[in-house]
Length: 512
Ligand SMILES: Cc1cc2nc3c(=O)[nH]c(=O)nc-3n(C[C@H](O)[C@H](O)[C@H](O)COP(=O)(O)OP(=O)(O)OC[C@H]3O[C@@H](n4cnc5c(N)ncnc54)[C@H](O)[C@@H]3O)c2cc1C
Image 1: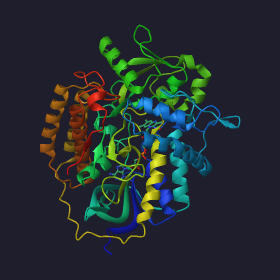
Image 2: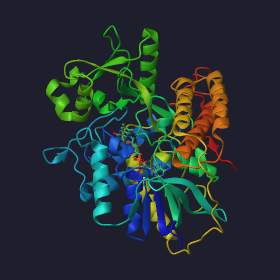
Image 3: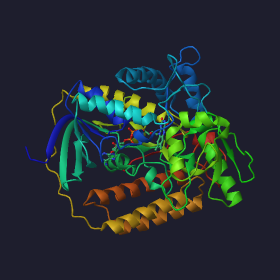
Image 4: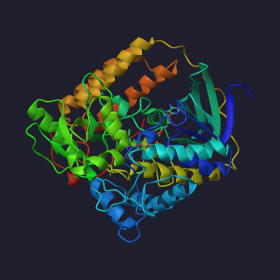
């Protein structure tokens, strides 16, 4: 077998909650290889602060209430069956996660369940304000200690390999050794996370560039709900720093309030995220300011440090003591509701190809994700993908006739950084919180100009990443232009109303 060729039953691309959950389950049925772009643990999962939603309180809550809250937040576009699967399986998977070792905060012997925006019940399990890190650590430890799976870090998934219309693996760049690898698999899962990095201001890790969505689309898979990008209302604003640190919704759940420059509240802080984000955006515009204040004082000094240690420390780094003074915040791109179209078993429109987590869309978030439902999404649909994919493990491994050699890199890294920056500025300024036909058409023009400079074939992981960003940016802009109404996170200034008569439907795109 050639040195650069690997074979397995299940290829998992991505090591966040969705990839880990799938890889662990699949490892009981066959050989699994898991690829990550960076180190193990460098994931959005690791960043998640607030918590994971599950109706585990059988007395005061139920999956039915969780279903109702999720449907209400989704602005008429959730797939009810998929949400039923999420909330019911969610309770089982979270209990299993606790048995695997995840330690969530307790009050006495019961879990201390938190409240978050648009939830009607306390159902958010948390580990301080570093819940994602606790989950990532628990799942990665199980996978690595028990040597369940062959993990390959710093391997960048490039393109899917197809044979007779079926996905039989993927090509990848080994970014440490600068070589190209081929992975053949009986089933392949894309669990590559979101795409917040295509916007100038975002809360996402640097690798969240929509790679899996771009890979799937190039291979002919259907993608859906591309217009629905969630802008988180409260990200910390620090002068001259582009990165935005997220201040979790849980802070507002515990009582923190938003104040304009006159010290007045202007929105219900626990309304759905799109409403709060737009209210802040408009208030900032009115005040010609780059931020609004988030006042932590109603939470109480001692509770702030105890309940939100990570947020307290991060703000302190910039000289902001949130127990004494408000934090300057503004909205930032945060979560992607759309992605590779999947069914409730994680199957995409291409045989042998699965997707889970933020890269995928089973329709559970509709037009607006309910807070703390995304970790649950990855946990539930990662697991379900593995269960379904295992049915292929008895098939014969197929190999395509040959793999094309990649071209050489064309662009220097400084040029790539500039092109990335242009994409991010176009998307933030023209495809952001408030959109219109004019801004979206202009965005598509600007993205076409960038495409001419980039070309279509990548000769390195860095080039491929920018190509992926460009592709998903075009898909978001196209879908946002096509949807001539406002719904959930998608707001059109020229069509400000929700139009159920014409638009209570999903937009689906594919190159076929
Ligand atoms: C700051 C922040 C706070 C959040 N807080 C919460 C919260 O409190 N509750 C909640 O439910 N959700 C929260 N979210 C959202 C949630 O964290 C994510 O939606 C979820 O973790 C996504 O999990 P995932 O497994 O799909 O992807 P990730 O956890 O993002 O993992 C993606 C993986 O894919 C790999 N990858 C990407 N591209 C490639 C490639 N080309 N080749 C190889 N590997 C690749 C990466 O290396 C990584 O291992 C938060 C998100 C952020 C950014």
